[in-house]
Length: 192
Image 1 (cartoon, rainbow, N blue to C red):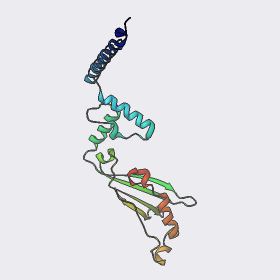
Image 2 (image 1 turned 180 degrees about the vertical axis):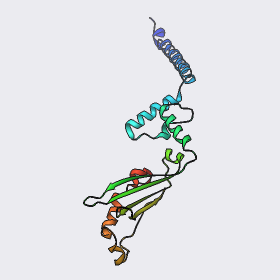
Image 3 (image 1 turned 60 degrees about the vertical axis):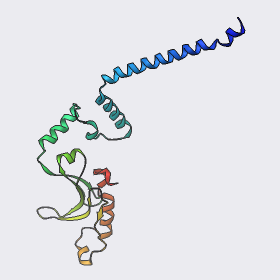
Image 4 (image 1 turned 45 degrees about the vertical axis):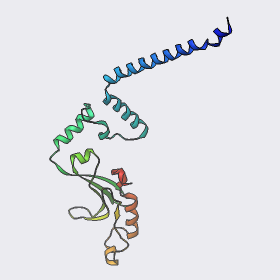
């Protein structure tokens, strides 16, 4: 071999590598076009939602039912919405007993329509205690909250002596219960 032939021996290897790399990129691009042409993007989104659910939290219907996606979950949501599309003012309640008493703190959430229920968009929340039993009972409001606003707690400390005597618990205890037992963040996570 001469010095000239060994000096440029890398050129054919470089050209071969360049050609094979270009052919590989073209083949990969062509395969990608074929796959994307026939891709089910809803299946990809569903896989993504499964992974998101597995790693980060609770199932939410708005993430699983994009337009055109037909699954059992989406059918149930669609049936719920269509059956109740003319209905208004949905109210749901959660209760939490107060230890050492017969009293229960009840947190309510109101939705304007069925679509708001599915979208998890409440209009307002409230929290109260029923004092008394039987045919006559009194509702003592602990707190109220409009959607997207912080809760407004009842000022029991500002009540007069005669007003606090009628309460089932001391004013400071009711104020503490409002902070600890009103389940606003459990019902509406956006209220945090």
